[in-house]
Length: 287
Length: 308
Image (cartoon, rainbow over all chains, first blue to last red; front, side):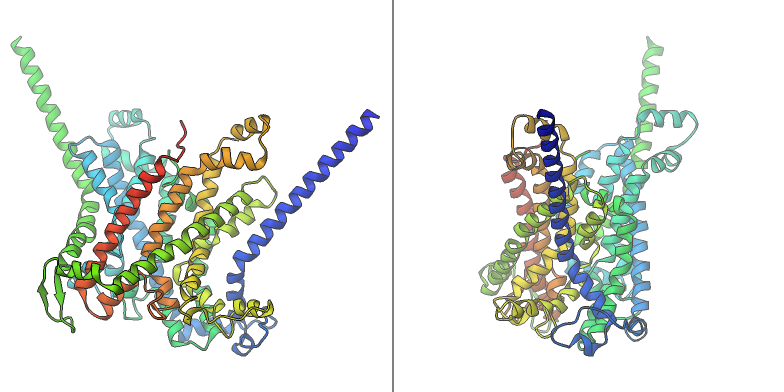
């Protein structure tokens, strides 16, 4: 009797667990569908002919994908050129931010000098100045340098980052000081120690910074909008905007352009999710 | 004695020289960042304050020194008040809802279930979406003739809305786009916060007979408060800096109902060539973001549980 009751309650518990999991999966699936709907519709419209997009009720199933809309987006919308520009600008900003952050973080983590704390606060205070606040004088500066419609204008203002310096300093501080002494005995100077020991030991943090920098650079909007008029220097974000205003009736072409602008960075998210998450959360969690 | 003193002197000189060398080295390493910050952060910040003292003529050709007059005019200007109110409303529409949704998603995804990696990637996906991409997507969804949102409304018997051209609905529509755009970030940050809460806390609360709702309010929420604080600060500052979605969706209209502060800076500075007024608005934005950060930290610090 007792054994049977126990078996029964075990079965009940198991049933409850399965029902609970099913409810969780249902909630997860609904949330996923809601979040993905805008992305799905974008892809679907990019593959449909315009007449089909304009039908009512809307037809969201692609029966005959029109791949050459993408070809047209590259040819007539100059999207190829915009993509190349975005890759050049984002890669340069990423490389530059990693370089300046490694150097500055090394100074803050390993060197003793007067005014170190003060300078560190000065670095951090730059985080309190939104780019939008300084955009007018920065435009004047870049214009005075003759950098409107140029890669320098898109790249140089963003080469230093307090966030990156802070992130790497945290990582560098976990490198044991004994290693510095040992390296000094082996005849390494600061530069050798930085490149041969500190940087390789901090690969994870540097990777996080690189992915984060690339994402931020790729998605920039206000600055490239202001300083580029020339197709030769426009980034893909601004190219997308001009596609929207110049081809307002060609929804499929606009949607194809949207997919082209989004795809490289979505791929980056899938490939480097761990690094990106570390970069995004390093402000929130201590240590 | 004498030799001891001499040795000490030599040692201290050597230390001083080493210190000097280290300082020179530090300066070389910090130099690139310092030069860039000086040129593109501190100089322009000072110059923004300075430009606010000058009034430009209607063609943007000449400007005259007017001292604080322009700042005072700005603070009295009804148009600028509207812009500030719009920005505040935009923050109010986007931050609490976005945070609640991000928390909900993170709680859902903080379970040990098979295939969770896929859901987590989907929930994070909007973090990789740029403001331009998100805005163009929603421009299509909100379109009165082809948009699925109006189709959904019509099917459920609700009168369709001309979202982006209706003064009542334009700001909510822009907010909706922004909430979706920020969801990935909020989700990632909150989930990471959840993962730092030790499992034992939940277990001991369970042994003490706490139900799942009681555990959420007594364990999860207090432990999560630093993370939520961080998310609130970042989302609010983001709201005050928003520009791209306005530029693509509404251009500040209709009837200035979406003319948030950065869009107003852009219009004054780059459309009307009124650098003085644009700079003055920039100063106000700077002070708002500064005060917001400080107040939020002070105000929320007391209720935030930072752990031992």
